[in-house]
Image 1 (cartoon, rainbow, N blue to C red):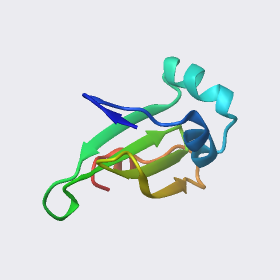
Image 2 (cartoon, rainbow, N blue to C red):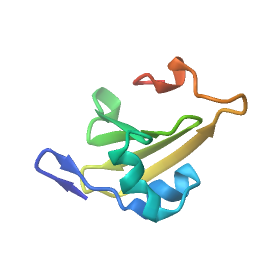
Image 3 (cartoon, rainbow, N blue to C red):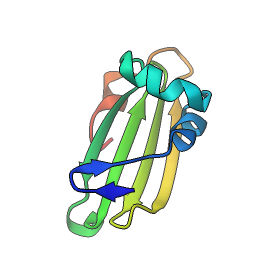
Image 4 (tube, one colour):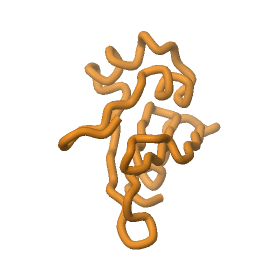
Length: 92
């Protein structure tokens, strides 16, 4: 759901993408074990937002339109341990 200066994502969507239980999402975010990044689309991506959620070894990306509908999502797991710094950068 999109609002004034906020995007609200159901914890179940984040949990599913990160491979954790929904009840762990909020506590892990509060503890800094899940971090996030929000990017507003420009040019051909105008009207969308890319939300990235990170754990030590997993990244979930969710693309939403201006109505807050999920357009697509993807998840990447690092097989060798922690995600590289490159995997945590915007636009990658």
